[in-house]
Image (cartoon, rainbow, N blue to C red; front, side, top):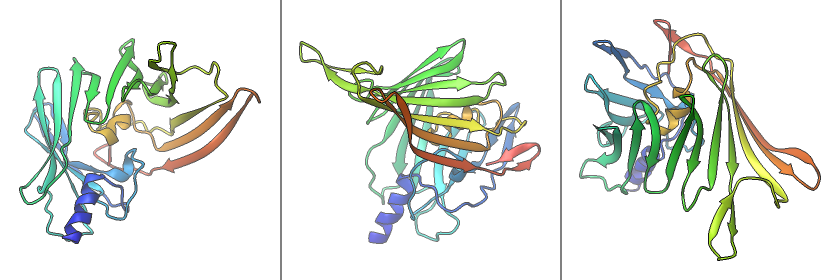
Length: 268
């Protein structure tokens, strides 16, 4: 039973393990192309754990992606690729993603609703958080988290080539007004310090992005935004100190990728 527990935990956390080729294929139905899967090591996911299922497998019905599941070619287990999976359903301007399993496995409930206006995501609702998306000139400008208030906000910056240049994340401070009602602020007024996360994307290739329709998946969302495919990622956490009038880098991360290409497109 303990073995099953840890293996299930690995699936649920959608973790990044050692890097393996995803062996994803591009399937063409009519004029629409689908990929059969991708490797999480190419995506933006901060969680790490030794119980890793690094490969995502996707199923489609010729019109939409209908199922998302995980596998690890290095682990032989009684959990098949279909034992635990995400079921994807489509409605009018709405997509629902629900975690399901065979009766043998008990899972905590997880369901995410994604609202669209034409092809643009406008809102994501799940059990723990809600996100609101704002656009300027048909380009994503801002995403605000509304968990118990707008406590986190991302601003997106794109270059002239249609590729994501950077994301700046600011964290709101909880205040209380004269009526003792809570509210959140994002400016630096009356703050002794402020921490921001800055993510920078660079070294883009010149090939078409095959992931543009996979933005409904959390770990692919950032990659889906660009025309091409970035090969370098940097993340800086900085602290703005008002009294000292200085900026300190609290932490820094960096990742780079070398893509293999098939038929002129990167293999994720």
